Image 1 (cartoon, rainbow, N blue to C red):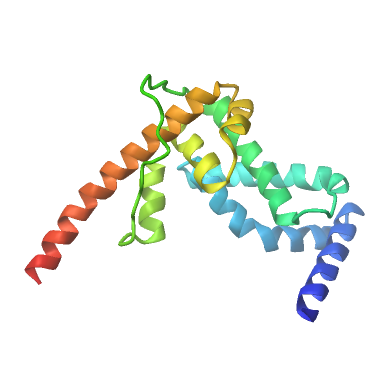
Image 2: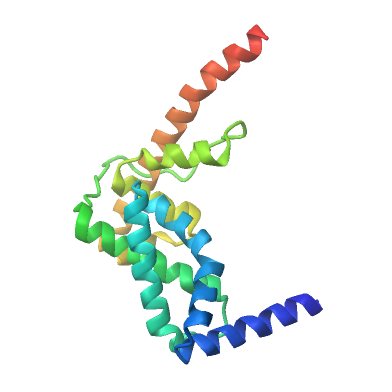
Length: 190
């Protein structure tokens, strides 16, 4: 508990120093959160250079708006929201993101059971999704946004958000099943 309090206190001191434009404090805050936020960026764009651009622009906004941070929530969550929003703006500006509308009703019952997949393998499968599917999947399944929030963020209907998620899950399930067949065959041979 004492470590948690001192960690919280040192984080508050770091934020205060960043607000005062202390470059060392800004570097420290960046180094503390950049690796996790870079991974967030890579979930939205495939290219490492694009992810780095998003990360840097996102952190510029973090430092510009840090005085608006209210400590009633997690600093990491606040930074993540800014980074996700920056990734969405990047996609809108540069990728001309088109959300494909699937007329079939979206089903929340699709189960993905990638028990045998490493995290990197699953992330690679997510990277291979079309940008619209990947974006909605990341926002809903990984970031935890509701379909209503996604529809507002992407300026689409809730139905479109649900169908994008459903289609993304279907594609991922098919890809996992395709990977699973060779694994089963190898296990039967050995």
